[in-house]
Amino acid sequence: MKIEQLDIGRGLILAPIAGVTGLPFRMISKQCGADLVYTEMISAAALIRSPGRSECYFMSRDDARPVAAQIFGADPDEMAHAAAFLSDEPVDLIDINMGCPVKKVVRSGAGAALLQDRSRALAIIRAVVRASRRPVTVKLRSGWDASDFCAVEMAQAAEAAGVSAVTLHPRTRAQVFRGRSDWGHIRQLKEAVTIPVIGNGDVRTPQDAKRMLCETGCDGVMIGRAALGNPWLFGRIRSFLMTGEEPPPTDPQTIGDTLIEHLRLEASIAGQGRAVLRMRKFAAWYSRGLHGAAAFRNRINGITGYPEFYEAVTDYFSMQTARFDATGTFHGRQQERAF
Ligand SMILES: Cc1cc2nc3c(=O)[nH]c(=O)nc-3n(C[C@H](O)[C@H](O)[C@H](O)COP(=O)(O)O)c2cc1C
Image (cartoon, rainbow, N blue to C red):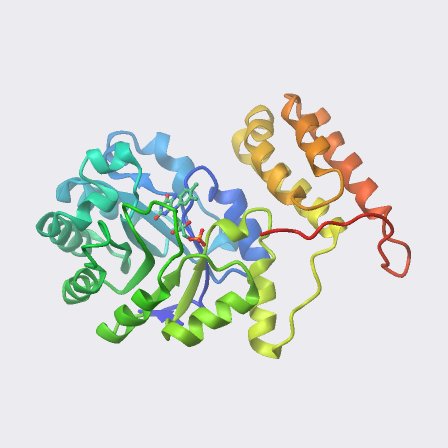
């Protein structure tokens, strides 16, 4: 997959997730096989008011690229300023959020509210395309509610305005995350535009990814929730697409080593104290489905010190790996990892 001149490999993409897709998780996801990673959404207004404060969202490193910086806002000028600013930063694409269903964002006229205000949406797209020195992409939901499937029309208008690729999460704003995403909408959108289309929504397994590519004809697959605690999903999908065989599950030692690496990265960027607080949720996700995960979660949720957190993680995962003998056979209860 290519977006303009940018090579996106097999098109396996980490979704933008607020509070999650900071630089450390983007680095881990790249290592585990993602071809492109997204920042969490960045307020255009906050970015231009105080770029230094927003830097934690868009800071990057070579081994976490290509990266798309996602911006949200309701004002075309602010969005254009933000895009111009980010064009001087180490980012490869500028993405416009047109799907966020969160009340605070929608009330301000941004995110999914733009699905209801097409002239403002188009003004934003045109202003961002004009100001950006990076290719511009747009991330859409299907529409505001079931009576309004506007994504195809919006994507066509975006293409005509110079947008280089579009992502569709085929749920309406009214659905938030309820129900199932309707991949039929991705197929319809793919048939209606010539720019690359990224499909998104409810991909949890390598088989899901293959099915989405086959059923919709989309160029890339974006994964959000299923990658939490399971960044190996990207590499597993790649291998499944190449060989048709599902790779074995990720072993606990690899999970533990990755969690420690993730913790160290967070500490090097945010400082040890904040790293511990941020890593609680990640530790819970990484341990999901493993033996004794509930007790581990309880333990780490009571820890505030970095050395104690580190020790709790290494203790827990050495207990997991002890359950494998030298031949790799597991001894003890193992639950299915439910992603
Ligand atoms: C906690 C959370 C935060 C999210 N933050 C963003 C965001 O900042 N920008 C965005 O475009 N989408 C955001 N999303 C939506 C995801 O990018 C994705 O479209 C959605 O989760 C569907 O994909 P999935 O089924 O693979 O998770 C968020 C989703 C969740 C669950």
